[in-house]
Image 1 (tube, rainbow, N blue to C red):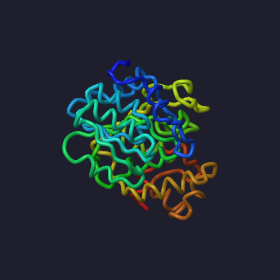
Image 2: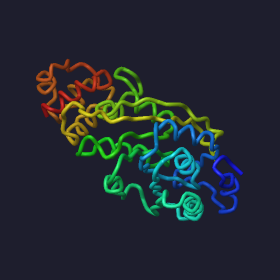
Image 3: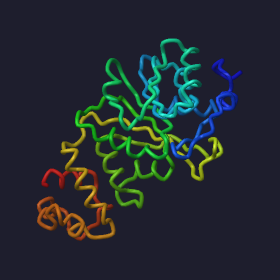
Image 4: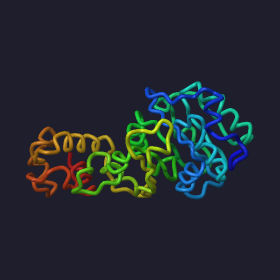
Length: 274
């Protein structure tokens, strides 16, 4: 038996014949001590609803419930995993809601109605960045979640927390820095997963800023897309379609600078002049 009174995850995977599918970006995290560490990185879970995307056989789901989450809403599109998740639901009556569906088609804000909500997930590699950008660019702010604790490939995690001037700094770093305070909580080695990915993973913790600098979300998206779309070029060239040198001069930004040298504040200033 394991720490939570449920069978070890390896046995669950074997019994339900759950080989991870590459097409679904799956890598199962089996070490319950490690999944508990992820759950603890999300802070106090009591009286909190947790939204989890891609629970797979439920390693992190179990850790979240074991660590006191009032309720977990788990969104899983792989039907093979539903029976294993149903066993967890029986073990924690009334605390686990399983949604069989596609996270990219889910209305997350609607799920969060009533009480504090946190997003905690070992995100499928193939949709992780897209989901994060959606969660960072909600029109309503502060958002429906109190925090996000998410696992990514380390390279993506570094882009999320990157500071201006660093090689990893880009559109993701601007969006995350604008609306949240983001930090890497810890790294997870490949051998912790089944099957082991070729790269190290990192858990990132993001807390929404109550009052981010005012800017139009869609416009900021356009400005960062233009600026970083040709990141090796000077800004006067990369933002030409948005107003080029004239726009940059109005914002008090040297047109010969490159996108990766601009602070979040400077991107917001540019956006508000577009």
